Length: 221
Image (tube, rainbow, N blue to C red):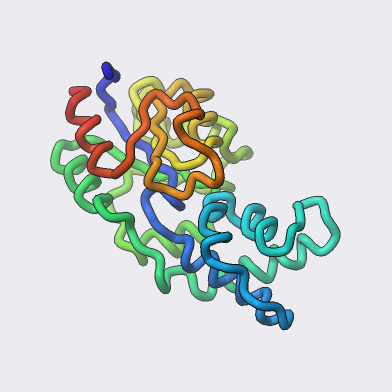
């Protein structure tokens, strides 16, 4: 596989850099327990963690954003999450080594997530994500992924042309956003990936582990 060497690597957060599903699922199940309902099994919630409130409420209550009662559930879920945002969340195995290697070789990296800044700014320092050249949240720009605006803003802040960036994510919308921003796209198959098969997303590359991504970056140079 021949890939253009990157000048910067941009990452999605949930399901790509960090395994945040345990705390997201706990916040969702607190909503259920407070209503006298039994918790939704973790194995049902984990695959939809990257979709945030929309995915978790859908899996746990069968509601969509346009349905009655959704907004109240969303507010309660987000308040629960903010109150216990980094209890079990951690970096995926290999991420610390990957980021350390990027910094050692003076390769810039940043975070582009659909998570609102009120959560991103709280979570990132608590789980050991240091050294990011930029952190773009879901409400940093007027649009969130799959729109390319957040990725283009990240490239602008890093001072790197979009075509010299790689974007790594575990959701189809990550690949769609990266493609729309004219970046090389990498599907992170170690992430949540929903019920989809990342091999069908038509990303420029597919990696099974963070260290496989590191090797791909090395090979491109």
